[in-house]
Length: 116
Length: 116
Image (cartoon, rainbow over all chains, first blue to last red):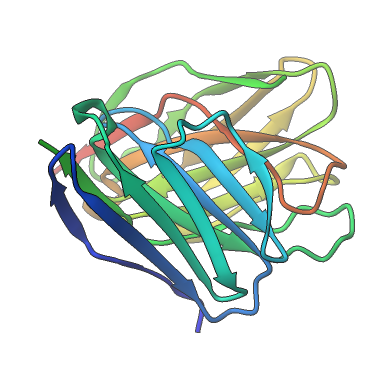
């Protein structure tokens, strides 16, 4: 299984709502990522988890809260978002061997989020 | 820090014609280089990567790229395109020799449109 799955595929939420995005992989990867992609722009890294610990936070506002409950699952909790947070949210995973070699990132199809 | 410039935002081409998508990068340290493809409403798929060794890299779907260190370029080529190659292509860079989960910096993307 070389697939990263993301749910839901689409999400519409108001600025006062709390919602969560879910990402799952069963490739045995120990690094997982959240990216944000605005329309007609490249993906921007938000968070990296390695061995279920937060390794990189790219100065993301606290209204985005990541969680990695186990090695296969990555969540992104959303609260009090702004309309400008509307974007495609991509999850990715890769091996994290602890060695200094590059490990390919496998991307999911994304969740298209609209904040009203 | 690393940066990537994709020189063409859109490239129209006729089916079976050759195509080149241009990418230049800037970095004060050694880098890894990648090309990703994104089809509409999908995540990113790795086309090819340069980590070390031969400067001519072959990838999936008949694509290849050449790493030119003196010109800091990594242009993507295909000798004969198909309608199905219509997609957005992203060049990306990662610092070499870092942690095994690489932080990717993407270019702005090139939309390749193949006309019949």
